[in-house]
Length: 271
Image (tube, rainbow, N blue to C red):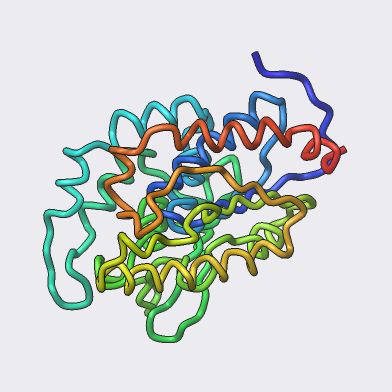
């Protein structure tokens, strides 16, 4: 049963990137909703855009969790990676957009009851691009467009890639949307230290990317009123950002657990 809570300040969630770890955002939202806390704004980067956009569209976190469990599976992953286009990326990405449409439905962002923003980056200018209107699935696709893996999304003359390359946790964005209190969710708690015994040459290159994301995320969170760090189990090397959506267990629970543990601190910020 949802608890009653008198909330005076507008809450914004800044949901960070992190591949399969993004399922923890579902747990975070579940705990907030259960505590009677109203979410007024959501900005998401990459996996954060995926979960945040789905929640803003469905407005029921239980439906979001059910959709992820039923629709993000081996079959949908195989479908998502079945449109090779070796130019700007290995895969064209149109199938990924269809997966997101199946997950959250067809919506325009400006029609959502909860204001939402997907954060992405222009490959050619390096500028951060905030998508606050237009097709929701396209915006999520742009925010999750991992360089080299997916072809960038062409949008208003720009070539958009994964927003985590510039802003892994979009705190500033959701604050500018009107949030009086910003809760950031940083998914990079347990990616270090890496294990030398498991490090190959490829793993070292991939881990280098995580170093960048780790430090950018910490910097992004400095403006937040409260930062949630889900305690997600890692293998201490580089975790495939995709297959964990199917294979990893306990990620949603990790997000829910840490939020419940800090719920009274969060409530004090909102009264």
